[in-house]
Length: 135
Image (cartoon, rainbow, N blue to C red; front, side, top):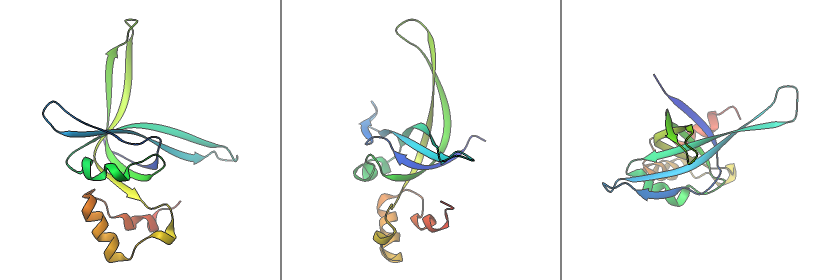
């Protein structure tokens, strides 16, 4: 099973485009940071995300640089030949599920408002899980 879930911040605004068949697809990067053991240094791992599905367009206004998100999907490795004729590899996280996590706990809406917000984005995630996160 190829399944990964990450929580991090968008490195750039989502780029919304459509396939030749008219299906919406979004591309963005997510940085996942962690503190090094025994040090105050922070290491950030960057993921290239390809976001598929009808909720891409609804989520576009919320998927801006710096937004905190949870993304679940599968890793896919692509191979291509660059301009110099050298084979290159890229790894992307392909997903149908992206949830925006509020950064400011004082701005978290009441439970009923939060559930309505989640339904509006049709992300498949309940944003109330933020309270259960260990960080």
